[in-house]
Length: 149
Image (tube, rainbow, N blue to C red):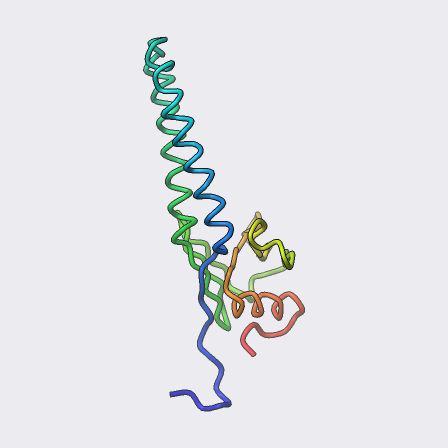
């Protein structure tokens, strides 16, 4: 049991807001409806197997990303930031060289809050969050303070 002076070990929450998930679901329903309507014309033209395979692989990628987005969670503790995804993203806070917090109040249903970090390894890593505590930890971290305070 924690007393009033102890910090939590970590904060964790969903990576994407409910609004973003609803919008993605609506778009997926639209893709499904369009696919059902386009299927007869696709079959009539006797499209090549290569084109059919390409379309199925593209659809598979879209579905995998959609499911990963629905299940994705972000966790931050005193030493690391971690987000589950198709392949999990993880960075040590001590390895971060630059960071940018993108948060648009009032538009989180459309633009998920995110922390973009550059670490010692090449490239950037983007961590999304819908949890207010994780977002507050991201804000503290972006201002040079410890994330859990």
